[in-house]
Structures are given as C-alpha cells and as structure tokens.
Amino acid sequence: MEFSHEPVLLKECIEGLNIRPNGIYVDCTVGGAGHSAEILKRLGPKGLLIGIDQDREALEAAEEKLRKTESKAKFIIIHENFENIRQILDEKRINAVDGVLLDLGVSSYQIEAEKRGFRYMDDAPLDMRMNQDSEFTAKELVNTWPKDEIARIIREYGEEKWAARIAEFICKARENQLIETTSQLVDIIKAAIPASARRKEGQHPAKRTFQAIRIAVNRELEVLENALPGIVESLIRGGRLCVITFHSLEDRIVKQFFRNKSGLCKCPPDFPKCVCNPVKQLKIITRKPIVPSEEELKRNHRARSAKLRIAEKL
Image 1 (cartoon, helix red, strand yellow):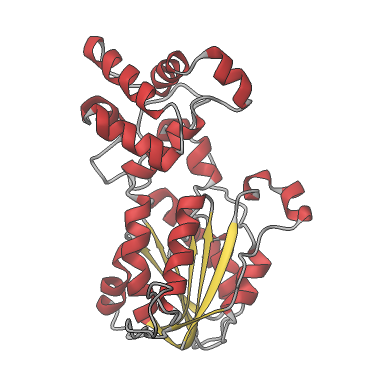
Image 2 (cartoon, rainbow, N blue to C red):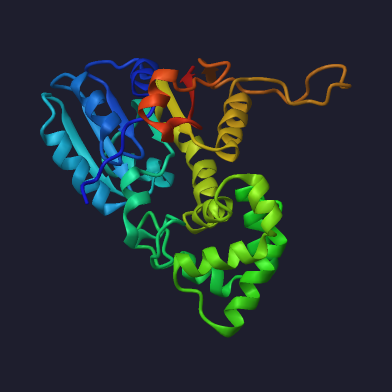
C-alpha cells in the first residue's frame, strides 16, 4: 500500500510557522511528508528541514517525497520519537531551531494497513504500534494488564462510559482464550455494551476503546507532555510552534502548556497579590484554535476533529 496522508490545515500551518528561508525547521511527525514538502519548498540553500518519525515505513515514504520536492534546501530524516527532540538536536550539534510542527494525527496509511491493527472494521493482529521496533503491543495490553488499569485507560483516553464493563468482559474472555485479533476484541466490546446503548450512540461501539488502547500502547499523551518543554527550549527567540491535535485530551495538554508558559498568574483568585512569579516564555498566537474550513472538511473528512494552536517564543 502506498503511504498516503493528506496534510490537515496545511495552509494554516505554513502561515503559522512564519518560515524564514534560511531557517531550521523540525517536523516532529513527518509521516508522508505532506507538511514537510511545503516547508522545504519555502527554504533556501541555507535552510534545513529535519523530519522525525517513529514509523520506518513513513520515513521511507517521506524521504522519497522530499527528494522529489523542488528545493535547494537540505533535509534530514530521523527514526526517533519526538519526545527526544532535545537529544536529537544535540547529536546534530544544533542549538536552536526556527520552527517546530507537531501533527498528532494517525496517518491514513497506518489506519488502513490491515497488519497494523488500528482499525476495528478489519480482522487483523492486535498491534497498534506506531513504532514497530517497540515490543509492547495492544495484544500484550489486553491480555496482561489488570482489569482496573484497562478500565482506567478506556475511561480516561476513550471517554467511554462503559469502560468498567468492557474491562470486565475483556478479563473474562482472556481467561478462556488469548485475545489476539481486532475482531475478537470487537466482539468482546459489543457483548459488553448493551444493544440499546449501541443503537443510541450511532457510532461503532469499539471506536472509543480502540482509541484508548492505541493511545496507551504508544504513550501518546505522556510523549506529548514530555516533549513540549524540550521543544520550547529548542526554539530561537521569535521561533514558532504549531501543534495539530485530534482529540480533547491532546488539545487540553497543549492549551494548558501554552497558558502556563505565557506568564499567566496561577495563584488562587482570593490571593491579594501574585506570589507564583510566572515566567513568560511564549506568546500565544491563536487565542482560539484554528479549525478546518468547510471546503477542507468536504475534501478530507478525517480533518473534522483537528485543532491547530500556535505559539511564539519570546
């Protein structure tokens, strides 16, 4: 299958990065290089693009696409998790960069590749790893984690009200047979959620649970929280950070991080004066997140939950 992923909010990201022709830019989730190709086109001979991804198949596709891009700028492709951005830049002897992009969406290729096990519509091995070098899979999670921990992630990451019941059904099922495929897991989830509730919801009953397991397998929220301070540290003064999120948990992390770094007082309202001495590191460019236009939504339905937040280092 060809690696494809239509870049979401492309025009808005490019404008938000405020690209300088001789600057250094990092695409922390390069994927199929949809955003990166446009960044590279705007860089001059002294410019540099660094593309990071933990998916080797994505990196191969990205390198091929970037080589075909009409640009005299250099680019580097790195197989890593963007959680380690500061270490990556130190190894390349780069002190600071002009802009960083984070697109936290799962690519169309990853979703549709049956062997990856992201889809609840296909029968595939329970995998869900974005980094296939990682040993921890969805199969290990559902077959070894305690019931309470499975319920917690389904409730918190999937915002699923039937989390406790689904976790109970998973643990009962695995006592008799190892849960190895997506179809097995889907059947367990369907059995756990009452038919009346499934009809009322109007969406696939496994959607929230699969999202939660994927987030847990790939440590998505933990990685984001760990990465943001290092990204801000790595920006030059005036450098921009653009983050595209796809669900409320990610967006909440980014929104709160931007607020905390923008110098807002965190003291309780009843304090007579500020005692927290907030440090102002970021200027928030987007007071409200940018969302896709109606035109983009018609073209790409997977963009419907996307939100873009932009900040500038002071």
